[in-house]
Length: 196
Image 1 (cartoon, rainbow, N blue to C red):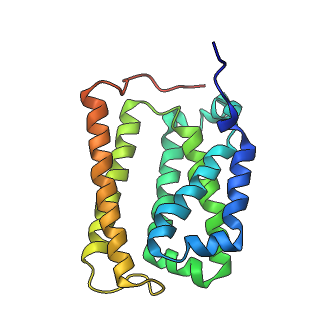
Image 2 (cartoon, rainbow, N blue to C red; image 1 turned 90 degrees about the vertical axis):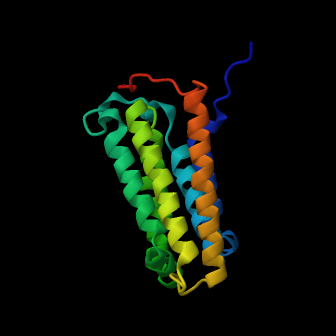
């Protein structure tokens, strides 16, 4: 019987991904379109933060007082994600080096890390509320970007904005189907949150 691989939980993977995303050629490619910035760069930065968390910290009981049932961490992650999905912030990150630096620091540390620490602690209801908000946000932003007759980001074209809207609506619908499939066929287990 093979041992379960643990390479995917090594912090060096997170640091390597973070370092790759900071490189100017990679950064410029991922910021070339509104779609790539929101659906590639920001999720990859969050993934880098997720991988930064070693399994020992993920299970550390010292976080229980602040992050009971993962609620505090998931709220922090949600607020951070919403901030960087706003058109004004996406524009500002292209125009102001300090704001771009803030994005590269806050998304991994205030979105990816809290998700990694909080998701194992969250129970069925907390995870359900979080997923429902993710789906609702995808539909809200997708609808806004799709129907807006004007550019919401001055650095991106209207066609790119509408493409992003279509992709967000598609992602929201796909997430709905995945969650419904998991619920109907019993692959999501209702279990107590991990406390430590």
